[in-house]
Amino acid sequence: MSSPSFIDEVRVFARSGAGGTGMVSFRREKFVHKGGPNGGDGGRGGDVVFVATTGRTTLLHLRYHPHLRAKPGVNGKSANKHGARGPDKLVEVPVGTVISTLEGERLVDLDTDGARYVAVEGGIGGKGNARFATSTRQAPDFALPPGPAVEVEFRLELKLLADVGLLGFPNAGKSTLISRLSGAKPKVAAYPFTTLAPKLGVVQVPGGYRTFVMADIPGLIEGASDGAGLGLQFLRHVERCRVLLHLVSLDPMEDDIHGDAESRFDKINAELRKFDPGLAERPQVVLLSKTDLVDESRLRETSAAFEARGLRTLAASSVTGRGLDQVVHALVAVMDSPEADA
Image (cartoon, rainbow, N blue to C red; front, side, top):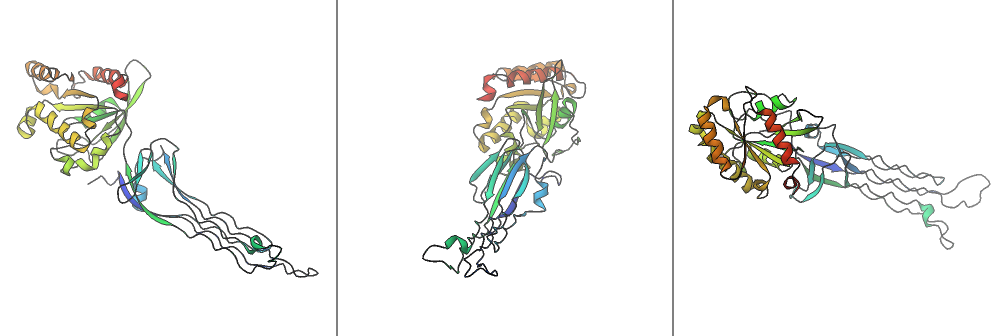
């Protein structure tokens, strides 16, 4: 399950405001003989509007307040006074929020700051009886009824926006790497699923002013696309990443637990392919991690095996800092290549 502080999927109930009632009224003033109709219109009801903002990073605020209600329009009054429009209900959501029906139909992807989506429109205001006066009907005693409120349920799903997404089995070293490369401070420990929620970090490119965003995607395991482990909850975040940095640990214990380095790499990519065939085709860089735990011959042998498959292969140790600058520069080169935007 997701961390309590990171909520990436919620169900909400959005209710627009009903229109205000049109007024049935006639002029009743001293010295005014047979005053005509003067009932004003009701105001339109408020809309429920989702607004994407960088000021929000999770959907947690909607988990505990899922009922979103706009205000109704104000009723019309006599003397041809029209009711005011009901204020809209503006609902802030993080950039990267996808809004869908409960049946799974995608309605909108709010992937830019300030993007707006009118989820339900307010009811139209009722028309007062002054609207219906004619030369042959000088005293209409009726008004047009207002439009009702509309309530619709939506599913909101957050997909993180990042330039680089970190992949790999649990304990591959993703959390340690992002903590070394950026200002992110994820929890780090030697047990599976330490990362219970995706973490974003801003990486400063050495020797310049350029930065990019890196996402620490929680550890995937075989069967993730079928719901095993935390896979289904976080595979969606990989979709937003332009480049994937695939960490393959050289810790000898990982061979005994999950198989050799190449088989672990293949298992993760198989899960990506099952979830979305296009994900496995996303540009990937292989990073052999925890190089401080093996000798040089093992490192060269494993690196050569991946390179023989046509894969960009790097090696680094987050503990010693070896190779980290080269990793950053290699990622920038891939991001600047045409394939990253294909």
